[in-house]
Length: 368
Ligand code: NAD
Ligand code: IPM
Ligand code: MN
Image (cartoon, rainbow, N blue to C red; front, side):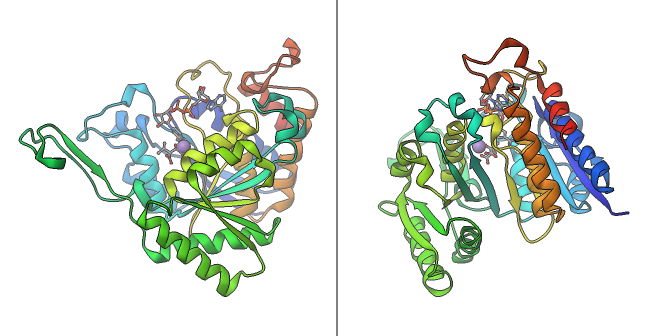
């Protein structure tokens, strides 16, 4: 029988609670399809700092590279919040593993489950039919550019003024834009054949190059795909004005981070937004949200973003599209049956349909 090695990175906060439900669903898939899943759990983020002093221990990188796919939950929390550049931060673990595995392409599918239209803070007629894919560049840009903090009190900063001085650099090389643009066009061809490229070309040099490269790739190899450019500030507004118009949205690392949280809320909750981070080797799957310290340890977090990340893993890494469809159908069935976690309930949800993390996972797994 086929056996897959899955590297599990639970991380911090609600991480361990939600990843358990992802595993529960994956095990149900394994049973149905006669496929074995072996799990190798490793440390990342705050828990890794506590145990080893670093957010991304070498063993974790090894475990990830030795696996068929990586399932991550979330990292971070107030315990490790610091503004001291000398101290390790949990987020460095996440950025580090993305870089180590070369995961330059982050897919965040924003899809409305019809039955949840009322859970959105937008009017149901605005969110009806929303089905867009954010293609976020993940290993370049502002997150990985040259940065520095200068404590020099004698005036290292702008204008030679006294006080601290700090900078982050937004850098891109042409090939980084080229490969993410190709991914976006390829994905669009399998969808509604429309790409919105988001930049700030009216101000930023990297954006001007971004726009030029995206158009060159388009004109040469993807002229059949519709391409529009949209400035990032306008995009933030259009996303809540006419979300159903968007198909594929391709953008720079930090723009994609911000726009994806905004887009998640269209579907009712950040707890619904899955993601896949792809490169040329082992891929990583994780919810788009964080460790939700405000609700951690209470068993009430929504595990659906994690479970839909398992769906993406089945689709993109394990070549099990039918099983992926099963996961999506199971989630849809559970929602259609009226079950809700706290973040997606509304005024009409009866109390006995409000369930916790574990119960939600079990309801989905039972329907595989
Ligand atoms: P967050 O995404 O953790 O939480 C934002 C809000 O959404 C909170 O109110 C939270 O309760 C809610 N929420 C998030 N996921 C939910 C779920 N599954 N079910 C129900 N509600 C959910 O963002 P934050 O509070 O700004 O950040 C907390 C920590 O997480 C920070 O340390 C941050 O760096 C980290 N973070 C990690 C990741 C990651 O690991 N991929 C992503 C984003 C933030
Ligand atoms: C995300 C998160 C991360 C990011 C943080 C925790 C480094 O917000 O995955 O969206 O900004 O990429
Ligand atoms: Mn984010």
